[in-house]
Structures are given as structure tokens and as C-alpha cells.
Image (cartoon, rainbow, N blue to C red):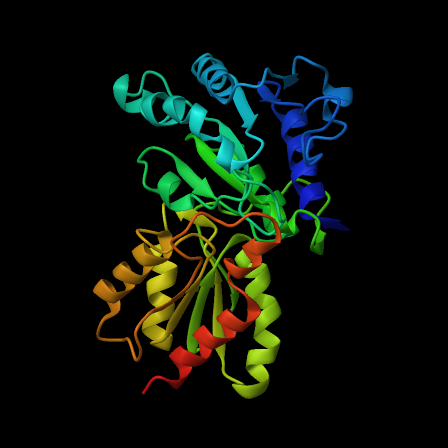
Length: 327
């Protein structure tokens, strides 16, 4: 066991993947000698060579097109797109080819790959560097969408995704790259990337979150619990597509109260989809309306003004109180 950060956990998982699978190839802008814009691939090109860790031109469409060709020819590409706001030039390859090859060829060709995407706000960046577009990715049939919330899940989930037979978008919350240290096994281990994690079991309230918002939720809970010492259940969603509704609905039927916390804008968002399904499937069990604590329906603001957009400790606590106080 080693106490490491999310950035180290991802690097370690990629190193293990490269060692285990000779067909695994990393590709992306500046991922070689520089180690990527966030240094997640630091040292890997020096260890495995330029044919396994490939610096590409600045072209997201080219990166994803190369990944398609590598995948259908038996390799396991792991492309990195520097920020999720940069994904759109490569989206044609994702939505028209990567997600469709299995169906298009009646299973003759498949396109397993792990598309690594630094994701979300919290770093006070410029335009296109802090987007939260997970609901768009999750809407597309034929690709899984996975997100870790701490170093342990970052390593275990990525190693599981590297063995998936389906393409995966692996969202990496930038805000927590270096914000959390946690004991993580040094050796290979996997966490089921299609299964939500129950981080704490309880009977009074279900709290659902993921990614960096799970980090923010955990920071808000001690202050909330001083005033409301309830027995809450905390669920890390993990898989944004497919969603593990079995775990969620079982929890809601037990607690009857739900708060969903994420940072994307709420209109047609993942929190809205969760809320709708919970309301449809658990209406007889609900003791209060489902509460969403999210961003707002605006372009995420630049630099420090994003602090007014992202779910804050105050907004999270207010949301929890609203649901607990509902009679």
C-alpha cells in the first residue's frame, strides 16, 4: 500500500496496463517526454518507448481517428484528450464510428479503447478548460462513461476499464488530481466500473454524487451533521452510463429521501435523469421530492468566477436540509 494522489493512481494504472498488455498504446498531445498537460503520463515514454506512448499532432479528430484504426486492428488505444472542452473536434469519430462499429459490422469488428478526458471545473481556468458535459456523453449508446472520485477508485476503475470489451470514456476530475491522498494497493486490482459504490450505508437519506463533487460533498457533511446527526447513505455513482439503478433504487426505497449533487448545468442533465427514474420507480417510497444540487444553465464562468457556479458547501448543506426538513 502507498499513500498517493489521483494523478499518481492514474499514472500507476497506465504503467501496469502497459506492462500487462503489449497491445496497449497511449496516444495524445504532449503525453510523451512532457508527460501530458497534467503530467499524468510522466515517465511512461521513457520506460516503454515512443511506439507505446505516442506524441500526436494537435488534432483531436486525428487522435480519435487513429484510435479507431488501432482498435479494429487488435490494439488497445488509450487516447488522451487534454480537456473535455476540446473533445468536440474528435466527437465525429466517437459518435459515428467508435460507438457503432460493433453494430455496423454485426460484431465482426469492435472498438475497445479507453478515452481519457480531464474533466470539470475547480481549477479557475479559461474557456473550454472546465466543462462538465457528462450527460451528453452518457446519452450516446455504445460507449460506457466512468468517473472516479478518489485515488483508490481512480486506479481500480481505470484498470477495470483497460480490460473492457467496449469503448469507455474515462472522466478524470481535474480538481482532485492533487487534492486527495489515500492508501492505494501497489499491485494490480480492479473495481467494477459498472457498479455504484456505497461509501456509507444509512437509513435516513440517500446522497448521490460522483467525481469532484463527491469530494465537495464529503467536506460539507461534517458541518451538516452537527445540526442534523442523521444516518445517511452515500453513493458514488461511478458509472454514468450505464447507470447502476439497482443500487440506487434499493437505497431510495430504504431511505425515502434523495439528494443528487453534481456540477453540470441541470437542464436535461444527469441529475435530472436520475431524479426522473427515481420518481418513476420509487414514487410510493419517497417522503420528499428529489433534490438536485447542480451548476446553473449558463456557460461555466471563467477563472475564479466559477466559484459562483459550482456547488458550494453552503448550497450542498442547504439542499440536504431542505430534504430532511420536508414533511
